[in-house]
Length: 275
Image (cartoon, rainbow, N blue to C red; front, side, top):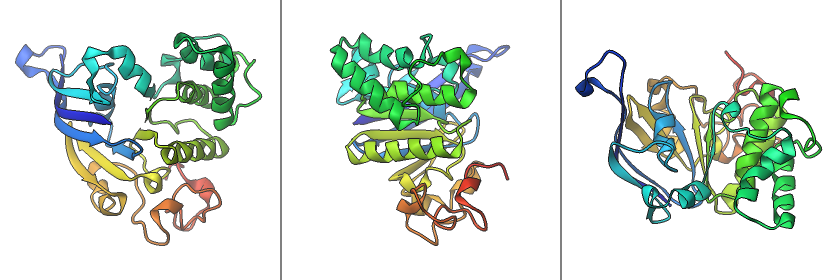
């Protein structure tokens, strides 16, 4: 469980006095139960990335508290960062090793796990992002989309209780995106919380149990996807017009039709394409 209570985050703005700081997150309270698939949606600058970075102490709130599994984040950063895996929007911010396999193994190695367990986690994580045979590849040789997949694999290898992914589908082709979606579905079914931060809900809305929409740092929407759809256009995000034509579970499901995926008059491959 992640519990956020009255969290406010401010940042200094050049040329402004202290009382003119930018408020990125404004008095947000929410809880993420174990096993919930949560989509945090909002336009650029809405505060969504700042909010989720408080979940494992990458950002310290100016006001309010964040607790993970009952323990305040500030009281045990190691525990928080083990329990809350984070995939950044730009994979260059978290890739640390020369090769794919070494990078994915970095986190589990720092947990002091046995070699057999590390190897198993690395193999499972790479398979989940369709890179099972790429462990020896050098990071510098990878495309941007491939680097994103390695970053996701690195987070999966930590086997976290809560997995946060910030715009995880940027640069991914359709097979990679589907592989990640399938893995997220498996994690949800196994009881791992998945928190996807995005301004484009067309890939993930149907997997969501709940949508939290931010505007100017405040919670503007907090509802199941069926109810959230009507309010999302006001947040300047991309979302299907409705969930009509199939159940929410059909979104992003392998083998679903274009209509099930919320794409009118197109194919499943049109998901995520610019209009």
